[in-house]
Figure (cartoon, rainbow, N blue to C red):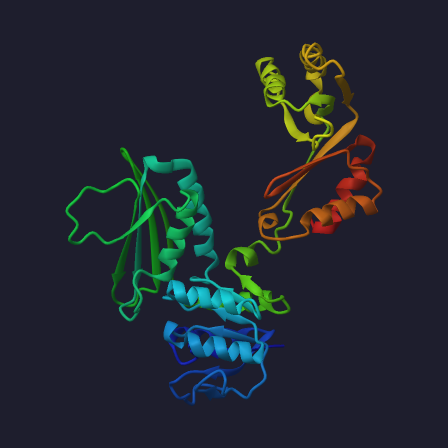
Length: 406
């Protein structure tokens, strides 16, 4: 059973976390921390500060106030307790202090614990990448009339995610009251609405010429944030010191989610190529002009001014490829061309690769244990592609599926 301390247990979210934890089979509330004295509705002791808490626990979950950050960090560090920070409204200085304390204890910090909001953030980044500067971007957030910080931490989380795409080139504009000028291209508008009992709504508008793209998330209850916080508790337990986020948690189980297998390609390897960017560019320009589809390109480090280049082409294009490359024989007198057509191309892909270490080692280890030889490898942030002998396809696929539960 995981024992948690709820920091800010008497607040709205603190009470929701307590109720949600009570319904969980693997988590229990050991104690609470709040300046407000606990009442009979609480079935756990409540202390005025984390340092004063005498009840042993495994993780601290914070849904309090930025003003309580100092005591929270000191208490968690003193007790060496992993920390989940779900409170919003922190300043840049506060965030720097959180990052500093993460050097000694594991800290999970997120402006929003909803899985849906974090998916919205990913979608917003994709939209910004595709639409670019040709669309104006505005964020509108709505919350209940008791919320103190404006704009919400979630609105800033979304704005920051979008601004990553523009290399921090967007300028945040908070409302437009008193502004007597046209909207500027770098502007990213952020607008806050407070009223009634709205749990939380966030709209991202991409406004272009004669068209509007809108992304929206609406929270029907605070329960979703409590569920996300408890998932963070399970995730951070046992982790080394460091700063963790929702993105890492969401992708923890998605190191490899897709497996692609193809026998339609051949591997072409060119040896003794002079390290000349114009020559190498010329080779691939010639292949392109010959309508040869090239994939999985890799190049060795130079040795004595020469490199080796490998790439795949469709088997039907082997003769054409060889003929086109042979045209460079005069420029590369020692050129060697080798073609392997009894190969299988395997690609494994997953969003978790971007935030997890050791995924490549797991892939290579699985193949090594299956006694599969890897002939060529290329990688990206979320993909590993490799070439193996065709005769080893069945055991290679089986090894990868077994390792990653596909």
